[in-house]
Image (cartoon, rainbow, N blue to C red; front, side, top):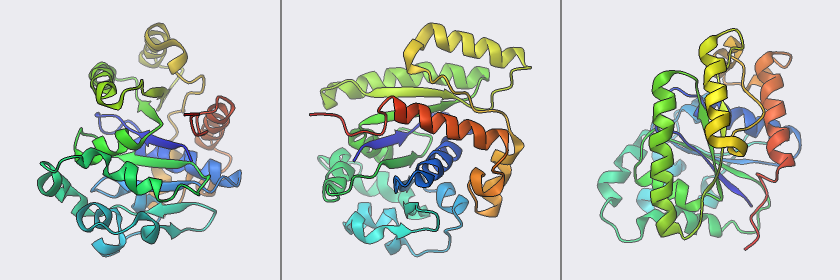
Length: 257
């Protein structure tokens, strides 16, 4: 199974929205995606209408108590499976920060699910932490949602530096794709950001851009992905195209060792 970390150190760029809707699109193609919510805010879980669970039923139990990941998977309607997030995840840095080899814990846990052929998508918190390091060490590839505002564009430069630092211990280059979100063709800022990204990152930038569609912000409040909430919306169209583009480029395939 290919493991994809959806990450950006900048908040509010569409990480959870992208994780949710790429997974929903994969589920419609019978790919049975497994989502791991590694954000203590658990926004991905809330967006899937999964809430109020005790910590022992969530991802925090794996990190803090060693519960196997397989026992934490919840089957949701529509073909998505989820290991929910929980506020207890915020304790990971304090409890595990000094533990030797802690960054490889998630990778080891996922190895126990090796018989699975499904793609795994990890929704990361917007910070470099024990949890994020676990996600990046476990990931075969990184998907980076990015908005066109100045601070997000500056943050991408810092993220690139952080990934290059991690590549040393990993012993490999981390393959990544950048997807521009909240794109508005009518705005000069969006067009300029697109031109800059094409120049700097070339093939690492996806061809598909995600429109600035209000339905994408509305759907989580109803516990729904964009396809269930507004199947004919621009956002649904864009996330369907993004998923097909990533599939066509082998982004969800397990790398050959």
